[in-house]
Image (cartoon, rainbow, N blue to C red; front, side, top):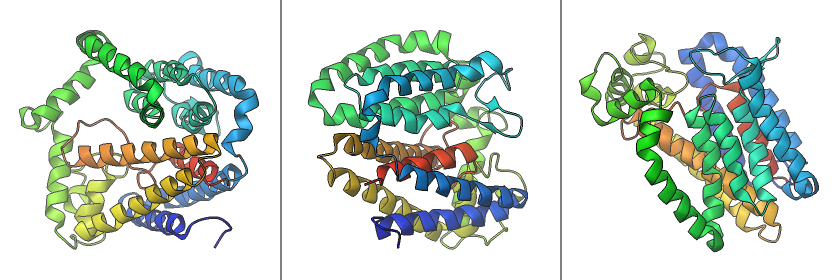
Length: 332
Protein backbone atom coordinates (compact mmCIF):
# COMPACT_ATOMS: atom_id res chain seq x y z
CA UNK A 1 0.00 0.00 0.00
CA UNK A 2 1.40 3.46 -0.90
CA UNK A 3 2.69 5.34 2.12
CA UNK A 4 0.12 7.40 4.06
CA UNK A 5 -2.80 6.45 1.80
CA UNK A 6 -5.73 4.98 3.78
CA UNK A 7 -7.01 1.60 2.64
CA UNK A 8 -10.56 2.94 2.35
CA UNK A 9 -9.39 5.50 -0.22
CA UNK A 10 -7.65 2.83 -2.30
CA UNK A 11 -10.66 0.48 -2.13
CA UNK A 12 -13.06 3.25 -3.18
CA UNK A 13 -10.92 4.29 -6.17
CA UNK A 14 -10.45 0.65 -7.21
CA UNK A 15 -14.22 0.01 -7.10
CA UNK A 16 -15.07 3.14 -9.07
CA UNK A 17 -12.27 2.45 -11.57
CA UNK A 18 -13.57 -1.09 -12.09
CA UNK A 19 -17.18 -0.01 -12.62
CA UNK A 20 -16.09 2.81 -14.92
CA UNK A 21 -14.08 0.56 -17.24
CA UNK A 22 -16.76 -2.15 -17.14
CA UNK A 23 -19.48 0.26 -18.26
CA UNK A 24 -17.27 1.96 -20.85
CA UNK A 25 -16.60 -1.49 -22.34
CA UNK A 26 -20.36 -2.11 -22.38
CA UNK A 27 -21.61 1.28 -23.58
CA UNK A 28 -18.75 2.76 -25.61
CA UNK A 29 -16.05 0.11 -26.23
CA UNK A 30 -14.34 2.33 -28.81
CA UNK A 31 -13.42 4.69 -25.96
CA UNK A 32 -11.93 2.03 -23.67
CA UNK A 33 -8.26 2.58 -24.61
CA UNK A 34 -8.71 6.34 -24.30
CA UNK A 35 -10.28 6.01 -20.86
CA UNK A 36 -7.44 3.76 -19.64
CA UNK A 37 -4.96 6.37 -20.85
CA UNK A 38 -6.91 9.12 -19.05
CA UNK A 39 -6.85 7.11 -15.82
CA UNK A 40 -3.08 6.70 -16.15
CA UNK A 41 -2.79 10.46 -16.76
CA UNK A 42 -5.10 11.15 -13.83
CA UNK A 43 -3.06 8.93 -11.51
CA UNK A 44 0.08 10.79 -12.61
CA UNK A 45 -1.64 14.04 -11.57
CA UNK A 46 -2.69 12.34 -8.32
CA UNK A 47 0.99 11.60 -7.66
CA UNK A 48 1.88 15.20 -8.54
CA UNK A 49 -0.84 16.49 -6.23
CA UNK A 50 0.60 14.50 -3.32
CA UNK A 51 3.66 16.77 -3.51
CA UNK A 52 1.63 20.01 -3.46
CA UNK A 53 0.49 20.79 0.06
CA UNK A 54 -2.13 23.58 -0.06
CA UNK A 55 -0.22 25.68 2.48
CA UNK A 56 2.59 26.07 -0.06
CA UNK A 57 0.39 28.35 -2.19
CA UNK A 58 -0.11 31.07 0.42
CA UNK A 59 2.68 33.34 -0.83
CA UNK A 60 1.42 33.55 -4.43
CA UNK A 61 -2.31 33.18 -3.90
CA UNK A 62 -3.11 36.37 -5.85
CA UNK A 63 -1.13 35.10 -8.83
CA UNK A 64 -3.05 31.81 -8.66
CA UNK A 65 -6.36 33.69 -8.69
CA UNK A 66 -5.27 35.77 -11.69
CA UNK A 67 -4.31 32.56 -13.53
CA UNK A 68 -7.75 31.05 -12.78
CA UNK A 69 -9.53 34.08 -14.23
CA UNK A 70 -7.25 34.15 -17.29
CA UNK A 71 -7.84 30.46 -17.97
CA UNK A 72 -11.60 30.96 -17.80
CA UNK A 73 -11.44 33.95 -20.14
CA UNK A 74 -9.57 32.07 -22.88
CA UNK A 75 -12.53 30.05 -24.26
CA UNK A 76 -14.70 33.18 -24.20
CA UNK A 77 -12.15 35.11 -26.28
CA UNK A 78 -10.64 32.52 -28.65
CA UNK A 79 -13.23 29.79 -29.18
CA UNK A 80 -16.17 29.80 -31.55
CA UNK A 81 -19.49 28.81 -29.97
CA UNK A 82 -20.35 25.08 -30.01
CA UNK A 83 -24.06 24.44 -29.46
CA UNK A 84 -24.33 28.00 -28.20
CA UNK A 85 -21.53 27.75 -25.62
CA UNK A 86 -17.79 28.38 -25.30
CA UNK A 87 -16.73 25.79 -22.72
CA UNK A 88 -13.76 24.06 -24.33
CA UNK A 89 -10.26 25.19 -25.20
CA UNK A 90 -8.87 23.49 -28.30
CA UNK A 91 -5.07 23.23 -28.43
CA UNK A 92 -4.91 21.17 -31.62
CA UNK A 93 -3.65 17.83 -30.32
CA UNK A 94 -6.16 17.85 -27.50
CA UNK A 95 -8.91 19.96 -25.94
CA UNK A 96 -9.92 20.49 -22.34
CA UNK A 97 -12.55 22.25 -20.28
CA UNK A 98 -11.01 25.13 -18.28
CA UNK A 99 -13.90 25.16 -15.78
CA UNK A 100 -12.91 21.62 -14.70
CA UNK A 101 -9.20 22.44 -14.49
CA UNK A 102 -9.78 25.59 -12.45
CA UNK A 103 -11.92 23.86 -9.82
CA UNK A 104 -9.02 22.36 -7.80
CA UNK A 105 -7.09 25.60 -8.38
CA UNK A 106 -10.03 27.57 -6.96
CA UNK A 107 -10.07 25.23 -3.96
CA UNK A 108 -6.35 25.94 -3.45
CA UNK A 109 -7.05 29.67 -3.63
CA UNK A 110 -9.95 29.45 -1.18
CA UNK A 111 -7.90 27.31 1.19
CA UNK A 112 -5.44 30.18 1.61
CA UNK A 113 -7.56 33.33 1.40
CA UNK A 114 -9.44 35.40 3.92
CA UNK A 115 -11.67 36.74 1.12
CA UNK A 116 -13.59 33.70 -0.17
CA UNK A 117 -16.23 35.75 -1.96
CA UNK A 118 -13.69 36.52 -4.68
CA UNK A 119 -14.72 33.08 -5.91
CA UNK A 120 -17.85 34.73 -7.33
CA UNK A 121 -15.70 36.13 -10.16
CA UNK A 122 -14.71 32.69 -11.57
CA UNK A 123 -18.31 31.57 -11.06
CA UNK A 124 -19.49 34.52 -13.15
CA UNK A 125 -16.95 33.81 -15.91
CA UNK A 126 -18.07 30.17 -16.13
CA UNK A 127 -21.72 31.25 -16.24
CA UNK A 128 -20.89 33.48 -19.22
CA UNK A 129 -19.73 30.48 -21.30
CA UNK A 130 -22.58 29.51 -20.44
CA UNK A 131 -22.13 26.44 -18.24
CA UNK A 132 -24.46 26.77 -15.27
CA UNK A 133 -23.69 23.26 -14.00
CA UNK A 134 -19.96 23.96 -13.71
CA UNK A 135 -20.67 27.45 -12.36
CA UNK A 136 -22.81 25.92 -9.63
CA UNK A 137 -20.08 23.41 -8.70
CA UNK A 138 -17.52 26.22 -8.47
CA UNK A 139 -19.93 28.11 -6.21
CA UNK A 140 -20.41 24.97 -4.08
CA UNK A 141 -16.76 25.25 -2.98
CA UNK A 142 -17.83 28.16 -0.77
CA UNK A 143 -20.43 26.16 1.15
CA UNK A 144 -18.16 24.20 3.55
CA UNK A 145 -16.24 27.40 4.31
CA UNK A 146 -19.47 29.25 5.07
CA UNK A 147 -20.76 26.43 7.23
CA UNK A 148 -17.49 26.10 9.13
CA UNK A 149 -16.76 29.77 9.69
CA UNK A 150 -19.54 31.26 11.78
CA UNK A 151 -18.45 34.78 10.94
CA UNK A 152 -19.55 34.18 7.35
CA UNK A 153 -23.09 33.10 8.25
CA UNK A 154 -24.43 36.67 7.91
CA UNK A 155 -22.77 36.99 4.51
CA UNK A 156 -24.25 33.68 3.37
CA UNK A 157 -27.71 34.78 4.48
CA UNK A 158 -27.22 38.03 2.56
CA UNK A 159 -26.25 36.06 -0.57
CA UNK A 160 -29.32 33.84 -0.13
CA UNK A 161 -31.54 36.92 0.18
CA UNK A 162 -30.03 38.57 -2.90
CA UNK A 163 -30.35 35.33 -4.87
CA UNK A 164 -34.00 35.02 -3.90
CA UNK A 165 -34.71 38.60 -4.98
CA UNK A 166 -32.92 38.12 -8.31
CA UNK A 167 -34.62 34.81 -9.16
CA UNK A 168 -37.44 36.37 -11.27
CA UNK A 169 -34.87 38.48 -13.15
CA UNK A 170 -32.63 35.44 -13.69
CA UNK A 171 -35.56 33.36 -14.97
CA UNK A 172 -36.39 35.93 -17.64
CA UNK A 173 -32.98 37.36 -18.57
CA UNK A 174 -30.19 34.95 -17.59
CA UNK A 175 -31.59 31.51 -18.41
CA UNK A 176 -31.75 30.30 -21.98
CA UNK A 177 -34.96 28.83 -23.34
CA UNK A 178 -33.64 25.27 -23.06
CA UNK A 179 -32.65 25.87 -19.42
CA UNK A 180 -36.10 27.16 -18.52
CA UNK A 181 -37.60 24.19 -20.36
CA UNK A 182 -35.46 21.78 -18.32
CA UNK A 183 -36.90 23.18 -15.09
CA UNK A 184 -40.46 22.99 -16.41
CA UNK A 185 -39.84 19.43 -17.62
CA UNK A 186 -38.45 18.43 -14.23
CA UNK A 187 -41.70 19.53 -12.62
CA UNK A 188 -43.90 17.99 -15.33
CA UNK A 189 -41.89 15.46 -17.44
CA UNK A 190 -44.97 13.99 -19.11
CA UNK A 191 -45.83 17.34 -20.73
CA UNK A 192 -43.20 16.57 -23.36
CA UNK A 193 -42.49 12.80 -23.24
CA UNK A 194 -40.70 12.67 -26.61
CA UNK A 195 -38.93 16.02 -26.19
CA UNK A 196 -37.57 17.63 -23.04
CA UNK A 197 -39.10 14.96 -20.80
CA UNK A 198 -37.60 12.09 -22.79
CA UNK A 199 -34.28 11.87 -20.90
CA UNK A 200 -35.71 11.50 -17.42
CA UNK A 201 -38.49 9.14 -18.52
CA UNK A 202 -36.02 6.79 -20.22
CA UNK A 203 -33.68 7.01 -17.23
CA UNK A 204 -36.41 5.99 -14.80
CA UNK A 205 -37.44 3.11 -17.10
CA UNK A 206 -33.82 1.89 -17.21
CA UNK A 207 -33.42 2.03 -13.43
CA UNK A 208 -36.78 0.41 -12.74
CA UNK A 209 -36.22 -2.44 -15.18
CA UNK A 210 -32.82 -3.42 -13.75
CA UNK A 211 -34.14 -5.23 -10.72
CA UNK A 212 -31.75 -6.48 -8.04
CA UNK A 213 -29.23 -8.27 -10.28
CA UNK A 214 -29.80 -6.36 -13.52
CA UNK A 215 -30.49 -7.53 -17.07
CA UNK A 216 -26.90 -8.57 -17.57
CA UNK A 217 -23.71 -7.08 -18.99
CA UNK A 218 -24.36 -5.51 -22.42
CA UNK A 219 -28.01 -6.59 -22.18
CA UNK A 220 -29.64 -3.31 -21.14
CA UNK A 221 -32.39 -2.54 -23.63
CA UNK A 222 -32.60 1.18 -22.85
CA UNK A 223 -28.85 1.75 -23.13
CA UNK A 224 -27.83 -0.77 -25.80
CA UNK A 225 -30.75 0.09 -28.10
CA UNK A 226 -30.01 3.81 -27.67
CA UNK A 227 -33.27 4.74 -25.96
CA UNK A 228 -31.27 6.25 -23.08
CA UNK A 229 -29.49 9.48 -24.14
CA UNK A 230 -26.02 10.38 -22.83
CA UNK A 231 -25.76 6.82 -21.54
CA UNK A 232 -22.00 6.99 -20.85
CA UNK A 233 -21.92 10.51 -19.36
CA UNK A 234 -24.89 12.13 -17.61
CA UNK A 235 -26.95 8.92 -17.38
CA UNK A 236 -24.28 6.30 -16.77
CA UNK A 237 -25.86 5.61 -13.36
CA UNK A 238 -29.16 4.57 -15.00
CA UNK A 239 -27.32 2.43 -17.57
CA UNK A 240 -25.30 0.74 -14.82
CA UNK A 241 -28.37 -0.07 -12.73
CA UNK A 242 -30.20 -1.47 -15.77
CA UNK A 243 -27.37 -3.84 -16.67
CA UNK A 244 -25.88 -4.67 -13.26
CA UNK A 245 -28.88 -4.16 -10.97
CA UNK A 246 -29.53 -2.65 -7.56
CA UNK A 247 -26.59 -4.61 -6.13
CA UNK A 248 -24.35 -2.30 -8.18
CA UNK A 249 -26.00 0.72 -6.52
CA UNK A 250 -25.06 -0.66 -3.10
CA UNK A 251 -21.44 -1.18 -4.14
CA UNK A 252 -21.13 2.22 -5.85
CA UNK A 253 -22.64 4.05 -2.88
CA UNK A 254 -20.31 2.11 -0.58
CA UNK A 255 -17.37 3.27 -2.72
CA UNK A 256 -18.50 6.90 -2.42
CA UNK A 257 -18.98 6.48 1.34
CA UNK A 258 -15.43 5.15 1.70
CA UNK A 259 -14.08 7.98 -0.45
CA UNK A 260 -15.92 10.77 1.36
CA UNK A 261 -15.22 9.37 4.82
CA UNK A 262 -11.51 9.12 4.01
CA UNK A 263 -11.53 12.78 2.91
CA UNK A 264 -13.32 13.88 6.08
CA UNK A 265 -10.97 11.86 8.30
CA UNK A 266 -8.03 13.41 6.46
CA UNK A 267 -9.47 16.90 6.93
CA UNK A 268 -10.24 16.66 10.64
CA UNK A 269 -6.94 14.95 11.43
CA UNK A 270 -5.04 17.97 10.03
CA UNK A 271 -6.88 20.91 11.59
CA UNK A 272 -3.56 22.48 12.56
CA UNK A 273 -2.84 22.81 8.83
CA UNK A 274 -5.78 25.08 8.03
CA UNK A 275 -5.11 25.17 4.29
CA UNK A 276 -5.12 21.36 4.00
CA UNK A 277 -8.13 21.14 6.30
CA UNK A 278 -10.18 23.59 4.22
CA UNK A 279 -9.08 22.07 0.91
CA UNK A 280 -10.04 18.53 1.97
CA UNK A 281 -13.44 19.74 3.18
CA UNK A 282 -14.11 21.46 -0.14
CA UNK A 283 -13.15 18.40 -2.19
CA UNK A 284 -15.37 16.16 -0.03
CA UNK A 285 -18.35 18.51 -0.32
CA UNK A 286 -17.81 18.93 -4.07
CA UNK A 287 -17.81 15.18 -4.73
CA UNK A 288 -20.82 14.67 -2.45
CA UNK A 289 -22.73 17.39 -4.32
CA UNK A 290 -21.95 15.87 -7.71
CA UNK A 291 -23.05 12.41 -6.56
CA UNK A 292 -26.32 13.68 -5.08
CA UNK A 293 -27.22 15.84 -8.09
CA UNK A 294 -26.33 13.26 -10.74
CA UNK A 295 -28.11 10.35 -9.07
CA UNK A 296 -31.01 12.66 -8.21
CA UNK A 297 -31.49 13.69 -11.84
CA UNK A 298 -31.19 10.03 -12.98
CA UNK A 299 -34.02 9.20 -10.59
CA UNK A 300 -36.09 12.18 -11.71
CA UNK A 301 -35.80 13.82 -8.28
CA UNK A 302 -33.72 16.78 -9.51
CA UNK A 303 -33.61 18.77 -12.78
CA UNK A 304 -31.22 17.63 -15.51
CA UNK A 305 -28.13 19.81 -15.16
CA UNK A 306 -25.35 18.09 -17.08
CA UNK A 307 -23.38 17.40 -13.89
CA UNK A 308 -21.56 14.09 -14.29
CA UNK A 309 -21.06 11.27 -11.79
CA UNK A 310 -17.51 11.47 -10.32
CA UNK A 311 -15.10 8.77 -11.57
CA UNK A 312 -17.90 6.88 -13.39
CA UNK A 313 -19.02 9.20 -16.18
CA UNK A 314 -16.78 9.54 -19.21
CA UNK A 315 -15.01 12.91 -19.15
CA UNK A 316 -11.25 13.24 -19.28
CA UNK A 317 -10.84 16.74 -17.88
CA UNK A 318 -13.17 16.00 -14.98
CA UNK A 319 -11.40 12.73 -14.14
CA UNK A 320 -7.92 14.26 -14.15
CA UNK A 321 -9.15 17.23 -12.13
CA UNK A 322 -10.74 14.99 -9.48
CA UNK A 323 -7.69 12.73 -9.12
CA UNK A 324 -5.44 15.80 -8.93
CA UNK A 325 -7.68 17.18 -6.15
CA UNK A 326 -7.52 13.89 -4.24
CA UNK A 327 -3.73 13.89 -4.53
CA UNK A 328 -3.51 17.36 -3.00
CA UNK A 329 -5.98 16.42 -0.25
CA UNK A 330 -3.76 13.48 0.73
CA UNK A 331 -0.49 15.36 0.37
CA UNK A 332 0.27 15.03 4.06
